[in-house]
Length: 189
Image (cartoon, rainbow, N blue to C red; front, side):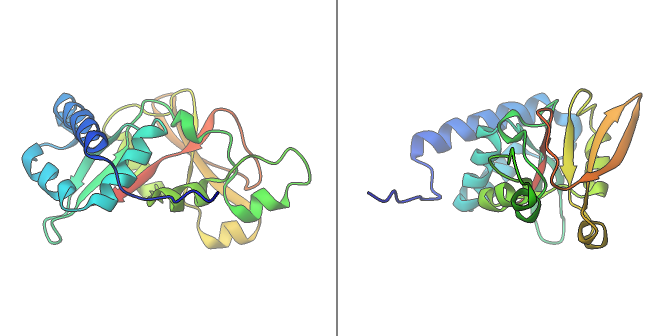
């Protein structure tokens, strides 16, 4: 029997997600000064596939929240704002090539494929640094960040964390994975 996978939430799931997003939005106003929840909610309700992606971010422990608004396009930007790297996305290497290159102890998944399946993008180094302006994130964990192709071609990948009051960007073999490393995503709605 083949399961049909749909990217739609039931009315109950939508209500539960919107309630969680609203509560987080109101609790963390410093992340999105001068924005109104009613406008964000209207945008979300008009983009059900994006709502599904936000639910995936929430389901995997990302605690997505609004971190910006593009005046030109009207889009709102959501980042994973969980204090530590999302629990439901840990122990993954960087991408499929890295995952397939492992001879043994292959991880179950990889960050790039998971993000694509969720309909989100990995945070870039710049986005990660911007996130850290909104609070202290990844003080005990680390997160893969989008890696420039010239680094990736040489077998490396970038990850970041926050220690000693500073953001650190590091490199690792793309095939590596750790129980305290996941990835943070961004979504524009």
